[in-house]
Length: 543
Image 1 (cartoon, rainbow, N blue to C red):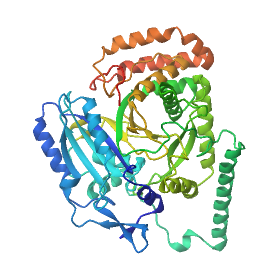
Image 2 (cartoon, rainbow, N blue to C red; image 1 turned 90 degrees about the horizontal axis):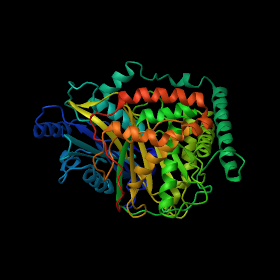
Image 3 (cartoon, helix red, strand yellow; image 1 turned 90 degrees about the vertical axis):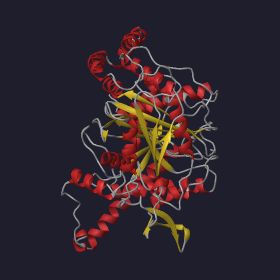
Image 4 (cartoon, rainbow, N blue to C red; image 1 turned 135 degrees about the vertical axis):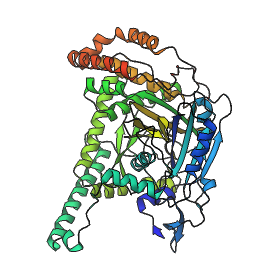
């Protein structure tokens, strides 16, 4: 047996029927040109069902020791049933994204069986437009966003001619990927005597760690009394909305892609980071959603924004993640002032972590997350929410990927919600797009598909602020019909935003905006998606 670390065990301890603690992903593929689709899917299933040594902990299940549920361990599963873990599904006609999202919503709602290794993979056929999909879910105790991206890179290739005969979870596939990524530069293991040269060195390191943590805790506590500037912290002035309630076990999943060049164009014109603009998009979308539900609060929503604490050479840790509390400034109507407030909040959160080592930051996060863990276990998270929602931005591969010749067109994350925040927004950067996956409790957050439209409206608002022409969202949305050709859509958008361009440039600087506009215009002509169908804005239906 292997002991499960406290950070990983926390996700197991918080889990109950209403709050499954697995993360997942929906990957959308185009079939290789001219391939026999039935034969291709059969061969894909054979690859997924190859039984070989799996990387930890995907060949292990959870068990307890003498201390019972207070001490959890990984135990090797000697009788792994591969047909239970790898499943084949087909969509009902007409095989639209609506039907795909309905299936993923149901699959994401069910608990993983703890008497087995904590993962499932579903191969899904029956999509329109010569496509198929792969939905996977794995317990958060076994994987975080960064390690999931390493698994994606280990599974897929950069060339359409490459083929693999290994399971994506196999030990061999992962070790091959690690060797390719790290080469022979594995972390050096020094003798114990050289780690700490003497007692004084040990004391000095301990003192430095203590001093850094004391300073961080002082700033953290001071935020509750308004003494830490723009720093936001959990529980402090977190408003109560329908997003911040107890949840049921049912989920709703929707997804959408946005051109990365659109976001980067706003970044160049405003001097903000990609993460700042993503948070501003989500802020604008949540303002609109809560207004549509007649419950926009006086205080601003607060988002937990996870940050990776993983060392570059660490490919094996299940979880190495901390968080920053982002003030979404949903109480600010002006988009420019809202963006300024978001940027100040994120800068203050980063400053809090900047002075700490990875070890110190990890310890700090474990201590500050204990109240959230206890409130969830005691069933109080719905009454005392630590955050309004989670917004996670996971860096993904920028190259076109393939799986045995099938081109990967989008990877849409599906994360967790639990008592206290009933909606999770996670996105992955892939190729020239940002792929958003939104998961919500069906009962607590009705009509969550509206968030897709509101994200588009918020991005257009930011483009107008920056003096840029805007274009329609480029990919997968739910309950949509075929769109007009790309050129017509782009021309009508430019006409709508042209009148506001001068005022926006006056706010952000005309010279910068003109340069960014020229750059984005020239780039978009090259990056218009040719494979994925454009999907037009629709009137949202009841969720």
